[in-house]
Length: 474
Image 1 (cartoon, rainbow, N blue to C red):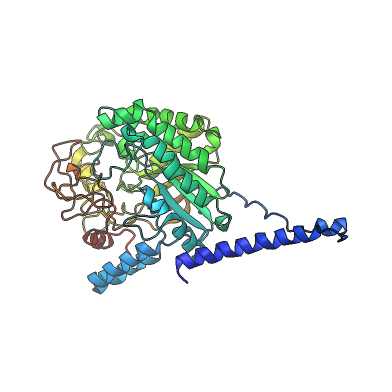
Image 2: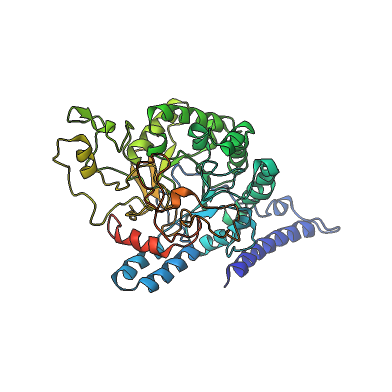
């Protein structure tokens, strides 16, 4: 049965149940028919509300996106051999679905599965939880160019975001056919973090002065929070972005105040997510103490870490969680970490702690993060698949999840590319050019892969590399 027929059949069954119940009521009210009071009270009772759980991933079977699985199978056939065999394992691993434009929700050019199609597929699979990325704010991704969105503040973007994007998401997710499915929404990655650090960018200034990011996120929370069996996590960037003392607390304040302004206040969210679509390792096993002294200097003062005290995502996520609880959020909040591409395995992975007495040599020989600079975010060379999705892996962490599906590009590498016909606002970002320098520190290259397609498009060569460098190994 196709997804469309499956959805129609599901709705038909619901309609038949409603019609049958209505017929009973009409018959009971017919003139001349004496119906005992007890019979009238025997009409079907409404279904009991689904119990909200503290951790939606605990004990749950995750939704496997059939479109992603098909791309993996195609790449596995193309790769062949041992790499192809290892790659096929990915086809059964849950990944998030990115709702990165209106058409991804309601249908349109280039969309093979709408939000309802995915929800139907999840129900058909018998999945317990499905993860969706809510990602279409006006002036989206305001400090980059690779994944610019379709909506602009200056072109009625806020109204369209509410009525054409969030409202249809809420309508679909609130359908009783999906009541038993745990629906996780990752709310607007790379939005509020940009307001912490990138207000020098004109589009970020506009997103800030117009209130588009704050108001848009509050609207999304207000519409999605009341839906039963729905769980909301707000993006907190990653340790290599907001980990510095100068960024950490301002981020907690801005993100916290945004959530507190929603209808349910601090109870509007179930937690936060770090490392979305990024590459920072979950743990740095050979650099556990950022204050360790080497050569008379703390490790965090090294050239690579630049005085940032958080070297990995687990330490950062747990510290952020503590900060939000201290800011008034309930102690039940949990964290998610995107581990899809932060494995950093392969031949270049260190096997132990450096024995050097020179600070930078010690760090460079000990770190598993092999990027030249932590600011590298586009199709990073040498990266590998990380820990498989895992529920309750550490204290305060709800799950390790794969939000950015491994094998989907971060942005196009060609400096003068043709526009993406389905996402014309996505353009080339110099951070995706393998021949350019990192804009956060021009002493280093971008470390981006060549021959990459537009953001979100399938990138076979990247997937081959990610499989070869997976850690733990596939």
